[in-house]
Length: 344
Length: 193
Image (cartoon, rainbow over all chains, first blue to last red):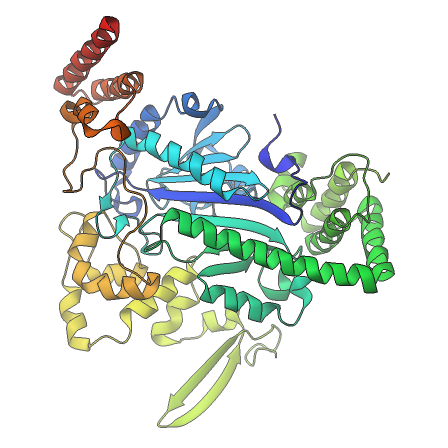
């Protein structure tokens, strides 16, 4: 079965993925940072037992794992694919993971909070994701009473998550808008609306690949619907602006644009060594080239999948051994040559 | 601009120092900033939670010294997290902490979140407005709570089954027996329909 990032959603180009994350805690236990090892293990067992038929809710196949049983490399690879963040990946305390086969639904147990439910989908689908999260939240809640306060809402380890416990985010591709001088101003303006915009692979001009994640800053005092609307609106707004710049480029500097896209494709298709930075820059070029109809490939090309594939842990997993930097660049080039489809 | 300390990396931290009314501006990169001593602000640079630590800066600074001294003695009776620890890590230890530190944190949460009142979803199960928790006995009592809160009977049986298993694992035989009886009752109910 294809994992979520291996599917292409051609309907709304420029939008990579949507994600909704809910944080919940069971009211019978202290938060993970204060929970002794023995109680952590007990809670994990009880959570796992209570959720063992999770698949009956949505027909998906779920796997149950302890993070402690995974190698560092496997953890790192899961982090690269954004199943969980670096804080959870480096946790030494007992952490459980329930993950769907497609990796689109993930529940981290006893991470920073007892229950961290996350759903991802390609394209812009925040509304649908929330509906599914809401259902699964009820399913979990029917089995485990939540820590909830009438005033503060769902109680969480960090005050930055309290209230709805919800983080809605959309990853968008803004290669031309982010080059402009006004981009930083635009980002801070979005901050005033309560939406954070940050580079997925680094900050500022170091964000190679031009992928940006838009998410809500606040979790308290807004309804879930208001949060979704906010993130949705900001994502569409930024995309509309990107589209405008791209249209202008297509009209005024088409030859230069085409030249860059084809050169990028050529390098990606034939290079024998490729640094992560170069790969992300060239992949970003062909991503917009495909959307703008400059490049036509034999089969649909999920460029984002290639971007995930060339991350270090994934390449090392494929080669089944740790790689030096030089070897990594070689493996990266080989991976891209293998996965990039032919041109029509 | 390059970092004035290492002169290698790009400076991305601007540090303004005012000593006896004389203002000095410095530009450092994050790595050098981390290695230098910025007193109470140092926490900002050396953490896996830059945002969280930034928050502790906001929470801890600007308060009256005396008030802080008093506040530091507040300790959550449930998990033994002190107010001082909360400020240091920007992290609560357990659900009770919110109630214990309520008066001390209300204003800060308002600053951080722009609000201190939850407007979103409420838990669908195990929760009543007055804060009472449902127990195994009252689980089926939810049938009276209106069609909105009604649990599918099969779903109820599934939940009770899970609890039954769990109770056996935990050797809580009384709870297990209660669950078993409840399941039997529900199953008979289906039979009658």
